[in-house]
Length: 320
Image (cartoon, rainbow, N blue to C red):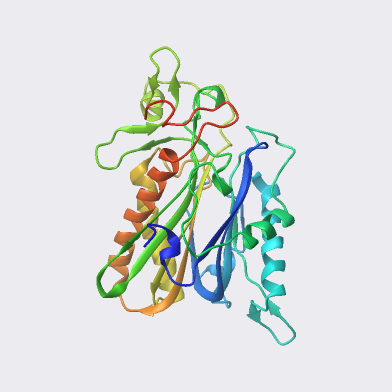
């Protein structure tokens, strides 16, 4: 066990990272196919192929999920994943060809680094080439390279965030893993004690301010707030139907609510995908409860593993 989403058999993760431009993308490969679901909870999402994952729609299995920086430009990186899968004969079988199914979600990281450099098809392809079923790099890598949190006071007082992963093994050999790129408008908090781990920085007291408390006090924002989104994937080796994987995605969003304050705002595009691959038997309510825990752990790791980049200090460099 690597305490990562790759603990789920059949899952590989690959990153493309451009630290100079402060952007990147991450691919979660399930080449042989996994039953896919999604829950889009934020109000400013940027996505591809999410309608296909709804229970009433035809295609049941996907071959990969892409998470990318670059705002809407970053959706182009999914084309590179499609090319990689097609070259290797993976995809949804049609009467004339196998068509790889690659849902995707993006986050806005154009406000740091170089906004003219965004992940595209070539970067998505490179992420696939780097994919492994072993340990997963965390922090300021892949889709989390340009991620930040606590942006109510503007980017000058934001805190660097990143990408995190975690997993749990429960009864009957069932494994639930999550990988999340955290680019939230709000603060990331420790769900065990409510302490703010990363949020708007207070330049006078060298501490961290509470976004919700600032809003309660009538703080009027002076900056655009469309630079946010928390995106991630939950995978399990439990056998689930399309309806059940969508329920799993819905329940897993509780992990976002526990660790990000405020979450699912008008300024966030929060999206969680879910994947079921394997034949283990488990109760969907239990799986959902554990998925929320794993998502929460991955979010905390995303900010604690992040590194200072593009002039934005990380929580660990601030003593968080």
